[in-house]
Amino acid sequence: MPNIRSAKKRLRQNKKRRLRNKSVKSYLKTITKNVKNAKEKNEATDLLKEAYKAYDMAVSKGVIHKNNAARHKSRLTRFINKKFSVSEKSQEPTLQPETSS
Image (cartoon, rainbow, N blue to C red; front, side, top):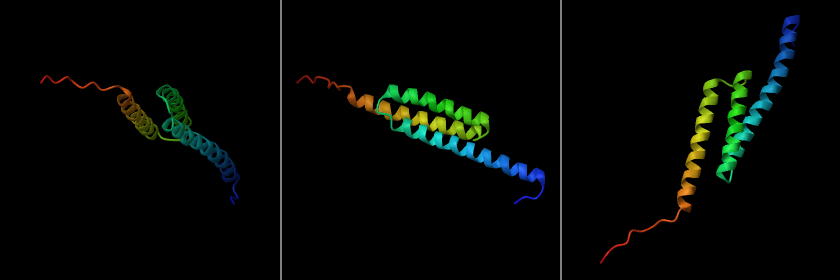
């Protein structure tokens, strides 16, 4: 335990900040999981917007570094694009060209 008054204050501040940072990071993990588990493209894009907003807010509050947020947003977007481009292609009927004999 700190003996100096300023050190005691720093300890109190750090406890508050640690709790706030923990809740923000937990929310980021939850929203990321929700985006990855989205069943439809519309749902995924709505959740992706919310995730972008959450990551940007975390950066502005100093919870995570801006490059960390950029990397997560990029990977999440790439994941969603890959997931739904493959599923859309598989739903389209494929037409075979007619072969003349």
